[in-house]
Image (cartoon, rainbow, N blue to C red; front, top):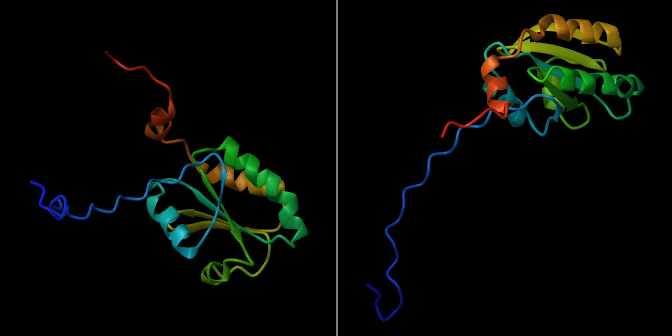
Amino acid sequence: RDSPAGPTPAAAKPAAAKPKPRPPQGGKVIALTSAKHLAEILDTAGPNQLVVLDFTATWCGPCQQISPVFARLATDLPHVLCVKVDADTHGAVLKAYAVKAFPTFLLLRRKAELSRMQGADAGALEASIRANAGKPDPWQTASKSSGRTLR
């Protein structure tokens, strides 16, 4: 019931639980925004999902040369998470992974390093990623299909 001063305030609602971060989507290169962003990517990646970190710099010629290859692999292998880490922006991440040369590619699964590659050898990068990519999770790809709805 309204009082002369105006409507009675509704009972305070409890704060909603913070939603769990959604797993990152593959099929494109993910530009890292912060160390926290990387932690979220690694925490939400599937247990058998490959995560590839590309440590790069805008001033690095070989980095720019291999960038389109990395982007193509991200598109060709959407079940692999491809993450670009800018050296000038994310120094703490470089230090955490002991990166000292560019480009450096780290292949991770369950946050553990499987492989490390330095340099812009497109053939070696593709071979290494494809060898460790595994097969797509059928449940991930099923959720992306148009499917049919039963009525």
